[in-house]
Length: 363
Ligand code: KG4
Image (cartoon, rainbow, N blue to C red):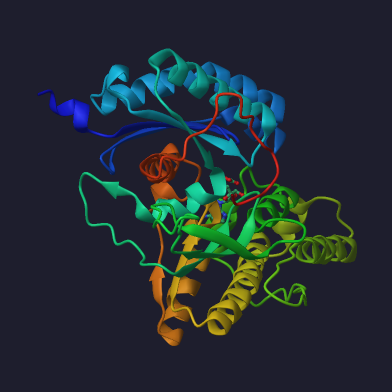
C-alpha cells in the first residue's frame, strides 16, 4: 500500500496583511514555512492596502511552490488547503482565499478556513521536525498582541454539541482594545520619531539604550480587561511637541542633536508604558480566573521588554509562561497550518462560496 495515502498533509496560505506565506504540515509536523515580506510599504510609513494586494498576487505562486518543494511534497499528496479567512485587509485576504479555493477545487480536496487570530494562538502548538517545543496544556490565557489586535483570550477544551471533544480549542475573548492595538501604538509613535516602518522592532532596539523612567506617559483607567492605547499615543505626541516648542525647533532630528539620548529615552519610556498596560490587565484576568498558564502571541510578542516583563511577572506569580519562537510570532502560514490541521481532524471544512472577513472576531 502507498504510505502517503494515510498521511494528513495540509498546505496553508496566509495573506491577511503584508506577508505572503505558505506552509506544509504533515501528520502534525511542520515541513516548511515560507514567507515573502513586502518591502514596498516602507517608504509610505505603513501598509498601503492596494499595494499589498498586488504584491500578494505577484508572490503567491512562488511562495506556495517553494513551500511544497522544501517539504518535498507534490500537490497531489495534499489532503486539504487551509487559508486565512480574516480578520485582515480584504484585498489581501481575497488573493489568498481565491488561490486556496482554486487549488482545492482543482485537486478535489477540502478547503479549511482559519481565523487569523486563532492561528496566532495555535502557534503555541506547532511541532517542528527538530522537536523540543513545549506546548501549553488547556486551559490557558493568551495575550494576543499584534499590529491590529490586543486581546486577552481564554483558551480551553472544546466540545461539539454532541459532546465530542474537538481538537481545536475553544477561544473566548475576555478583553480587547477599544481603540488602537499595541503594535499600532508602537508603529505610530515610531513614525512620529522618524523611524522606519514597521516601528515596533526599532522601538525595541532603541529602548535597550534608553531611560525607561524619563517620560511618564499617560496610562488608561478602563474597567474590566479591556485595553486602550490612543491616550498613550496622544501623550507621547504632546510630550514631544512641548519639547520642540520649548527648544524653538520644528524637527525631531534637530531636537535629538541638541538633547542627548532623546529617541532612546522616548522609545524606552514608551515600551515600558505599553508593557505595564498589557501586563496589568493580564495579571488581573489571571488572578480573577485562577489561571496560572499564560501565553503570549502575535507580532508584538517579539518585543524584548514584553518577553522579559512576562517572564518576570510569571516568576513572581508562579505562572507557567509560554513564549513562541520568534519565527512564529509575526504573520506566518505555519500557525494557519496548525489551526487548519486541527479543524481538518474535526471535519470542520469551509464551503466554496464562503468569503473573507475584514473585521476582528475570534470564531
Ligand atoms: O502579528 P503581526 O506580524 O501582524 C499583524 O497581524 O498585525 O504584527 C505586526 C506588529 C507590528 O505592529 C510590528 O511593529 C510589531 O508587530 N512588532 C513589534 C516587534 N516586532 C514586531 N513590536 C514591538 N517590538 C518588536 N520587537
